[in-house]
Length: 211
Ligand code: PRP
Ligand code: URA
Image (cartoon, rainbow, N blue to C red; front, side, top):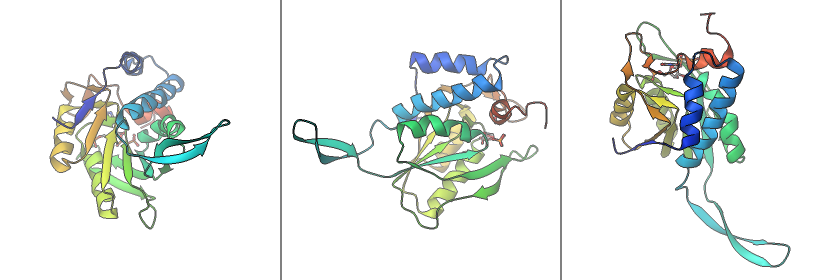
C-alpha cells in the first residue's frame, strides 16, 4: 500500500494506547483525539508547498517562507469533529467545511445528511478528517463529493484504519494519501475495527449507551 503512511512516533503510539482503553472517559477521549489530530497533521503536511515572502524582523528585511496554498479541513460528522481543533491550531488559516454521513447499521453504506461545501472552490488542499477508516465507505463517499465539487488535492487523516477500508479507499481513489496512527487487524461482522477503540463518535460525545 504505497500511499498509506502510519506514524510510529512514540507520542502518537502512547496516546493511541490510552484512547483504545475502554476505561478512558469521553473528556480524556476528546482531548486525545484532538492531540492525535495535531500530531498526525504535522506528519501529513510535511510536503506542502511554500512560497517566499519578504518580511522585516526588528533588525532588517529578510526573505522567509510561508504556506503557498489554501487548506481546507473536512471533518466527517460526527467523529471527525474531534480532530478539527487540534489541527486548526496548527493551520489557523485553514477553512473548515462540514460533511455529515452516518453508516446504515445493516448495509454499512454511508448515508449523507449534511453538506456545507462552499458554493465555489477556493481551496488547494483538502484534508478529510475521520478517526476511523473501517469499510472505507464514508471516506470514499466524501472523496467522491469533494472531487465532484472540484477538489484536486485530497489527503485522508485518520487514527485507525482496517486493511479492508485502506484497500477500498486506495482502489477508489489511488491519488489520496492515507495518514494513520495504526493499521488494525480486521473488521468484525458489524463492520467495527478489531481491536479498534469502539465507536469513535459515541465515545467522544458520551452517547455510548444511548443508541
Ligand atoms: C463512523 C466513523 C466513520 C465511519 C467509518 O461514523 O466516524 O465516519 O463510521 O466507517 P466506514 O469506513 O465503514 O464508512 P458513524 O457512521 O458511526 O457516525 P458518527 O461519527 O456520527 O458516530
Ligand atoms: N466506526 C467507528 O466509530 N468504529 C469502528 O470500529 C468502525 C466504524
